[in-house]
Amino acid sequence: MTTPAQPDSSGRTRVLIIDDDRKLCRLIRDYLEPMGYDISMAHTGPEGLELALRDKPQAIILDVMLPGMDGFEVLKKLRASSDVPVLMLTGRGEEPDRIVGLEIGADDYLPKTFSTRELLARLRAVTRRVTQRKPSPAEAQQEIVVGPLRVRPASRVALLKDQPLTLTPVEFDLLVCLAGAKGRVKSREQLLDSVRDRSFEAFDRSIDVHISALRRKLGDDPKEPRFIKTLRAAGYMLLDPNSDV
Image (cartoon, rainbow, N blue to C red; front, side, top):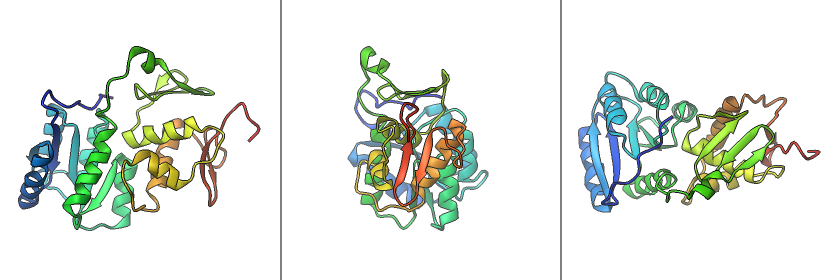
């Protein structure tokens, strides 16, 4: 899994928009460029995937409905080699579309009725996690150990039985939040706060979908969990093997 690109020497953030609505792409570009973003655009799925893999932008705004290859397929192929933050757009805004996108590895989701201010807030949130300062060698070695699971927040590395886990930025941040509070319950609201650097109107199932994806990557069974336990009406907890919970 590649590490998302860092800002260039100018401090500007490179964003790729993949959307066949050329007018919308121009509107987003004209709004974001004065805010410190360098925008590139693609208008088909194959073209967008090629640019994403070649140019390694720091974030991608990805439409679901695309000619040549839909946004879900673009995201699947992208996630095979990159954990770049992806903000998905849909003209339909239906819950099944949102769930599919989140399960595949989208970091956030917006219907095309979004306001530009909301787009900017969400874009800043998904990019902030990968534009932090580079950790010192000592910081990079600090880790949280939970049985066979080791998490290094500063270097954004997670290992299970010494094998690296391929996690999206949101999945990693959820794991850090749960691991740092091992043996204690984290509510959905607390988990949302840990992965969003903004006030968030909760899409109720978003955290559940991300947790489900994280469980799969941990090889965890929600009915007999070794790692993540669901506490009905309370939230989630990463089990501490040294406790009696």
